[in-house]
Image (cartoon, rainbow, N blue to C red; front, side):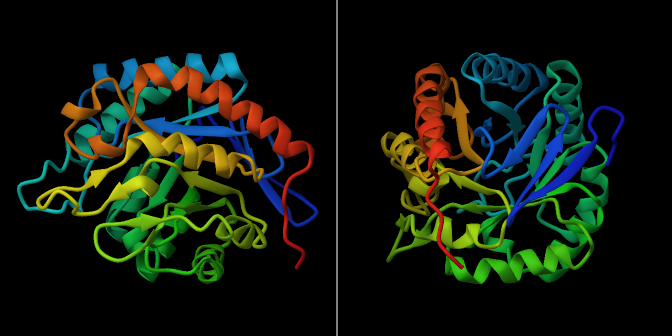
Amino acid sequence: MNDSIYIIKIKVTGSSMSFEIGNINIGNELPLNIIAGPCQLESSEHSLMIAQFMADTCAKVGAGFIFKGSFDKANRTSVSGKRGVGIAEGLKIMETVRKSVGCPVITDVHDANQCAEVATVVDILQIPAFLCRQTDLLIAAAKTGAAINAKKGQFLAPWEMPNVAEKLASTGNKRIMLCERGTSFGYNTLVTDMRGIPEMMKTGYPIIMDATHSVQQPGGKGKSSGGQREFAPLMARVAASIGIAGVFIETHENPDNAPSDGPNMIKLDQMPVMLETLMKFDQLAKENPFRLND
């Protein structure tokens, strides 16, 4: 990874691990971080608009900010679904955001062969939930030295995520986050069992709550996924009240016309109030966080 801007450090306090990326400190015992951006990268101008708005908003409420955007949505419901700008254009956009806004950036990888190239630009590689057991992908991502955000598969129990973390850590890379994003419940539905968050915290790694994908309705519209964005703030609040490292929120100025995942994205102009509220929950939680005894 290009470390000319950000140097990543690891700190272990008790059984809780944290790491630093530039001015962002990520850990379950530290102030809440926000991972936010559009589902798909659309253009440099669009990404810069969202990233700057979110950076300014997070600064006002005291949250760390990491910009998120995907260059390829490889798991679209239908072959006709829009996949994104592609890796070459996507990395150009991410590099522009990283340098112009001065924030860390994160994107997802779908193939082991993508990892080294993507890690030359981004600070954090994200492992999609569907791919969280793919050993070759996990190893390749971790070997880059970039931090990793591994989403819990919709098909996994929370106590299975230590196996994912062990695969990543076997490379010597301990810059690992584990991300809750809901569990399959019948057809086209996800539910989130919040007991899973303190369960995954027993690993010591920072925990992220994906508030928007947890209210997704996979394939719910036939050729695309539906969602219940009205419940995303609720999921974020509940997770923040436990005392976690960060909340993942996809956002767009016009979700209903976004190229993907519009039904579960938060409208950009609603983010300031939402984040102000989340930081109040976070402050209360960090004073007396909920933790399970080993």
